[in-house]
Length: 508
Image (tube, rainbow, N blue to C red):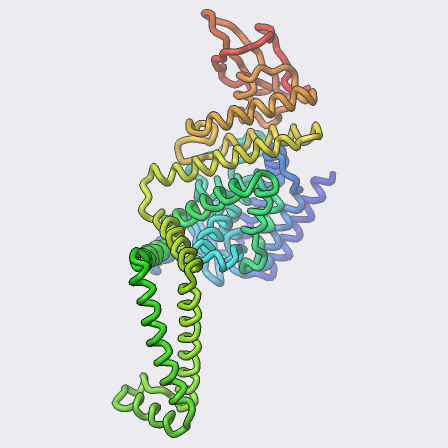
């Protein structure tokens, strides 16, 4: 009864919101369809992912986004074409187009929901002090959040859980977002995605969390990898950003060349400082007397085209004051570099920036290695967190979460559980989970070889699982099943004292 009441309540709320919007009937029907499908699928989604957010809260967030951010939604046929080349290209690529005023979308419910979520993004959620990384990491996390929000609609239908990799808008962004949710908690990452202009430094909070739970080295390594993954992702998605990175890398490489000869560079800084002092002295002289200022004004405007003339003496005076301030700032920077310790520190900082920006030249293999390294660090971190599990309910949630984690798409061909380079760390986590679960009497005496397959099953409810070991031609095979589904059998090696041909429940 409560479920029906929530559904009716949310449908009525959506209708009221849509009455005030410029949203055509076709779009309204699709939005109602989205709500209905989420009503059907959310229970399984919440159970599989072992998350805390209720269906009511999830639906409320969608309605708030529609109310606050979506004034116009236009649904078009797949065959419809636009004269505007930018709009047409975006539609062909993404199946939707967003501008400040409206959403234009093909009649695909998942894409409409994704577009609504994307329109609700805060543009900058990483503090500006992180420079070029601020935008790229903001976009990476926002994209991951958008994908995460559409998951109940995309991967669940009320009776099964299926992930079709080609339907995920950005696999790398989804991978990073889900990893961060696992290691930092869903609330932390969601709060981060809702931040405005990076006011709260979530990067710093993340590093503190990882340092306290593991160590500083782990925090630094994860942060370095995140930056590189984010920049690569933005380069792949944004051609203008790619050009900007190229130019910045070239500029930094030119700067670092000057550090090769310390003596020459220091001499250059001293000479530049002398030039600046002369310029400041000249500006002070012009500003000191109105007569000189007027002559300078006339001189600068003489023979100059009208649109390039300085509007007034007052404007010239302000320009000179601004220029003086910039020169004073440059002197301050030069004085900073003339300190030997600062000089070395600045040199190292530029080297680090070059290393970061150089990801633009990475091969496909190097890019993949970044993700592999990121996964291995996250697995080590998960292993450390397991040591603090104390409640039975916690270990059950961990089993579900780790199963979900292993079945995340790593790329378009394979899931995390299929990545060879992280198998050792995966096995260590599985062994830890199995040991804790047995000690706490959450599961029966399940062999490790069986449990590794439990972590790969897409059967929704793990607590209802059974397994049976059979033998054939001196080989052992296991089948995992519940009352409705029997999965294909797998060959296994170590069965311990498990009985053959016996149906055995996995969870106690």
